[in-house]
Length: 298
Image 1 (cartoon, rainbow, N blue to C red):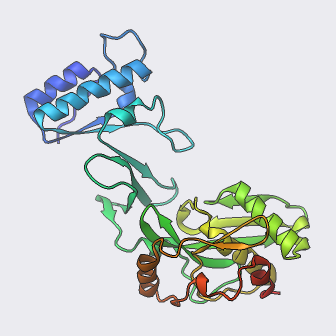
Image 2 (cartoon, rainbow, N blue to C red):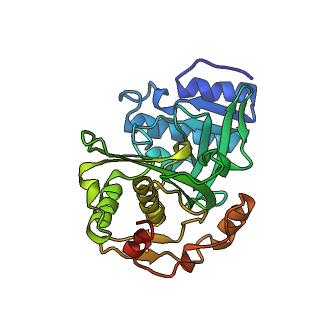
Image 3 (cartoon, rainbow, N blue to C red):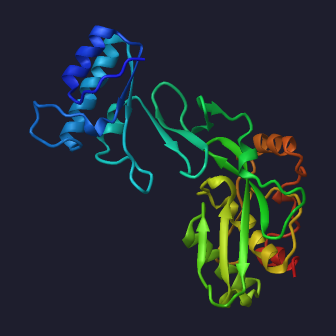
């Protein structure tokens, strides 16, 4: 592996012509600076022109070039969006800084399908593929514990088993509503549903903490029923059954709306069978009222 300390695209392209590598990594594109432009490094003009030159060099010389870009605190690509428009493929490298697992997510791909993810583990010799990613998002408890609920979520097109953990603090001084891996506004809506439609008034003077195991972030509304059951389980001190809650989402009216049954139904059933979970879906529940579902815990 050859290393070149250079930020000018003209010299980088000259080194590619001289070395003729098959693979080249530019880290990072925001620091590449062309003297032919008067703007500062990382500006719209610099990023657009430098990325266009490197892209032309890759296509004309048969060299695969990876342009590493910085991201913001929200996880979006920092700087101008023109970089995503110029390149052929956009991959996001995600993961919790305190975890050894990383997710590679395909956002754009002119040569294949998008909405694909791969899970890797940081090892001594670098990144290694994880064959069973659902194992890292589940706790190691042998029996169901109060405040825990396993759901099936779809990360892009890949089904994953993720455990939701909830803790209801009745100290009376900690009234915060915190969520890690879930949208905080949606958690507030679900707590309001429990208060208005399930008569869980004690949550008004208690703190509620919700967490997803493994640091995965869940953006889909299919986790609503699992979050409600986890909170209710922590409140009542009872563990849930080994059902997978995937196909239902909650609403402000207190009803549970089923998602499309065809959305990943076959693939997530296979994952559930591989992890020894009961082959029972939320479509088999006898009611569509979330208040009635919560009432079974009282």
